[in-house]
Image (cartoon, rainbow, N blue to C red; front, side, top):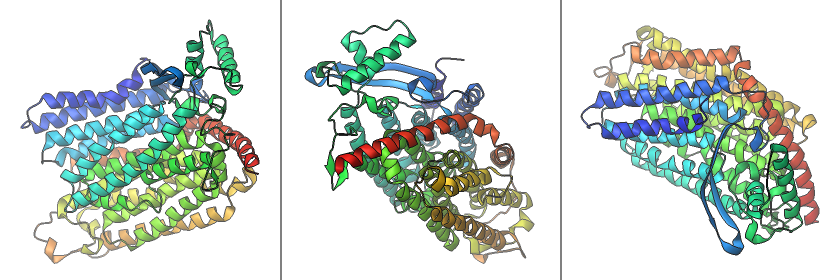
Length: 581
C-alpha cells in the first residue's frame, strides 16, 4: 500500500477545499460536487485502509502501529535544556481504525445532506472540508502536539458553521460551544506541557549521544540502555531530547527522574499526587467533548441551532474525539490514576446515562430529544472504559462506532421533517405514517437501532459494556457492580422516550398543527434522502448481525490496551501511594 495513505486521508479534504477556493462563488453545484468528490476519495481511502489493516498485530507502543509516517518536523537545540523536538508522527491501530472508517463514511453523508444549503455555499463547503481534515488528523496523530493542533483547529470551522448557518439562537450556541471546548483545550494544554518537560524520546536521545544502530535488535538494545541511564541520572541534560510522542509518554522508563509527572516524583497538589491532578485535567478536557454530565450543557444548544449536516458531524464524529482522547492518551499515560479514579469515571458515565435519558424523556423538541440521547449513550463509553475489562473497553470502542452511524441517521430523519414543515415539535404532529410511510420505516429503524434492539450495532455495544461492567469486580476489582445495575435502567428509559415519541408523531389519525398546514408539504423521501439513509441503515444492521467485522480489527489492540493499563496502573499506583505514606 501507499506509504502515505494516512497523510492522504487527512489532507484529501484540504486539497478539495483548495479546489473549491478557485471556483467562483456563483457555481454552487460544482462547488458541492468537488466537496462530494473529495469526501468520496477520503472514504475510499478509509475503506482501503480498513481492509488492509491487520487486526492480528498488537499495537503496544510505536512498533505496533501500522502504516506509520514519522518525520522530524520541528527541532532545535536549547543548550542545557536539551533538544526541542516535534514530529509529524502518524499511525493507526485497532482503536483508531474504527474512527477513521466512521469519519470517511459520515463525511460523505454530510456532504449529501448539505445539498440543500443555499446560503454562502462556498464558505460553508470550505469550512466543512477543513473540519473533516482536522477530525481525521486527530484520529491518526501519534504526536501529542500534532494531535492538539488538529484538536484545536476543529473549534474554528464548527464555531462558524453553527454561528452563520444555524438557527435563531446560533450566536449563543456557537459561543457556548467555543467557550466550553476552549476551556477543555486549556486543561489539555497544561498537561501536555507538563508531559513534554517530563518525557524523553529514547531513540532521538541515543542519536544525540552518538549511539549507533545497525539493526532493529540493536535499536531496541540501545533504547533500553538509554532508559537505564536516564533512570540513573547518567545522561547530561544537554543530550536529552524531550518529546511529544504519545507512545513514548506511555512508557514509564522514558520519564525523567524527579520530573513533575514521574511516578516517584512525590509532587503533590491539594493533597493529591500531581499525576492524579494531570489525569483529572485531561479527563475534564476530553469529557467536555464526550460530553459527560455535568459539562454537557453546550451540546443540546449546539445541536438545536446547528443545520442538519453539522448536527450529523457533531454527533457522529466530533463527540468521538473526546472518547478517543481518553482511550488514546489519558488512560495509557496515566494508568495509575485511571485505576484510582475508576469509580469516579464509571459514576459519571452512569450519571450521564440516566440523566441524559430522563432529559430526553422530557423533551418536546425531537432534535433536542436526540441530543440528550447522545449524552446518555456516550455515558456507556465512560462506563466501559472505567471497567478496564476487555469486554467493557471493546464495548466502549464499539459504542463510539455504532453511535456514530446511528446518531447520524437520527439527525438526518429529524432534518427530513424539518425541511418539509420547518418545525420539529413532537406535539405538532400525529399519524405521519399515513402521509410518509417510507420515512416512518427509516425513523423506526433509527429509533430501534438507538435503543439497542438485537440485530443492530447498538445492541452489541451495550451488551459488551454491560458484560464488562458486571464482570469488573472479579476481573479488575475497580468498579462496583451496582453501577452497572443502575446503567441498565438507562436502556429502559431509552425505550420509553423513543417509543413515546414514535407513538405520538407517527401513529394514530393524521393531524398536524393548524399553523403549519399551509406551509408544510409532507411528501415522502427523495432520492437524495435515500442516498443518505439507506447506507446508514444497512451498516447499522451489518455491524449488528456480524460484529466480528469490527471486533476482529479492534479486539487484539483492546486486549493489549487493557492488559497494559491494568498491569502498569496497579504497579504505579502502589508506588505512588507508598511515597505518600
